Image 1 (cartoon, rainbow over the protein chains, first blue to last red):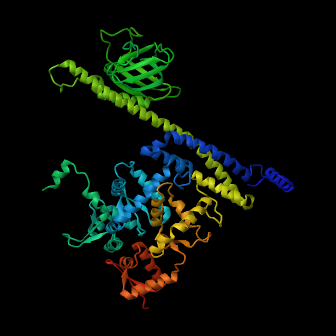
Image 2 (cartoon, rainbow over the protein chains, first blue to last red):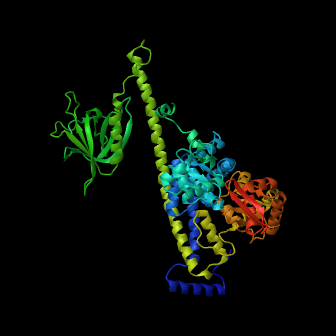
Length: 258
Length: 381
């Protein structure tokens, strides 16, 4: 701890500081830091009070979490930046999201051999919920999205690709540019796509279509079914369970069975 | 206004309060009613109005008397209103504040807002018509209608409890939101103060001591404010990160050795946090701590590959050694894919791929890139 304002040297320094103060006409940074340290203490106690009343709300109510996060973003505060932050320590938001991060990484890793590192947000959500067990706190898709955003800090290509009203979560650093993304979106409905479909819907030439599909194959994101009737089909395992677990209305069921 | 009757304001057996709004003035048609401002209450059965000062002055009309209703937007100097058109007075109507009226409609003027929600709820009630809840016929006919009526009360009693619970929850949540908003106002002040300080630091470097800078950074960390000022020595690091770096230095040595000297940062994240159980590290905490390995002279390094993959590796693990051994492996087997290499070394596929890519970059390997996968061969050129 420095002792300021004592001794001849300190007096001289103070005179210099005052001169500068007059010169600039505003508060010095050092003084502001002192002010901030006081305000930090005050804020901390406000936050403690808030936590004592509403900590449960944050844990139990996903809507409230959304509101909380959005408010923080608006004022320029990231409550998840550090486990050492007040928000994390006193409200417990940190542990909730960081643990979720761990669970997301583990699910993605476990399925990577199958889907190449691409998974729908829905499937990720289901599997994370299952992994957490039935006595754990509920987790919303918004929670997952926020946790994933934080994971990006660690490199490794965590990203989200908008597809069919929801997202595909990418967990490998495979390079996916606009062309790849658009083809993924096209494949979303049926889980697979063919060269003709790409040519028809996107108006690309054959070479461009094949180039994109080859890349997806190489990255392990797509599987080739060369025995399909007509022309080869490129299937995306990431989109599989989306299809097999989709709810079907009685009408649709009637239409499907011959 | 002659449809209204005096009431004591107490709810009946099956009646539930839906919403209430204060600051409401009544209009008899287009004329202001000779009543003060008050509170309007919507129940499942009635529309009740009570003077805000004199609670004895309380009137009500049945929802069944409403033909239709509409919104009237606010104007300059005029509050928003809801206009309610009513059926003619019934013969057996109880006495009320007005004996007669030339208007078949009334207005509710919302001087303190709340008309949107009120309108919505009124619409709901008028659609559901809960005052018409019939007595269920399903119970045994032996005791007949008497039991039926009791049953109805039971069910409505439950409905009422649910409604109460919902209100309580809403109440709790609105209180939480209010407290949250106030908290955010205070947090915003802190953000502005910190920006002012940061600007000053940026403008002239020498004015603040190292100590003060470290303190300032720790405040930013506590508040979750992004740090715009970085110093070469510590980067975004604070004392906290320095401690973390030391802990990681101890904790990761054994796991790194087991995994061939290198681990993806996501793997480290999972390992460390699973071990901690609580007071977990944020991804940024981990990255910031790892960035300090070199300056703190710990035997680990954070490394970023071209692909963006971030790893922690043992410093003793020299690059040349890794590449030389990779070349050996590939030459030995003739060729290798990342999967095969991974199995050979007990590395993750991700990291084995990085190592092969690195060897390729250095010119020791070359690739055969086909749809069947990426395969590496010794570079004979």
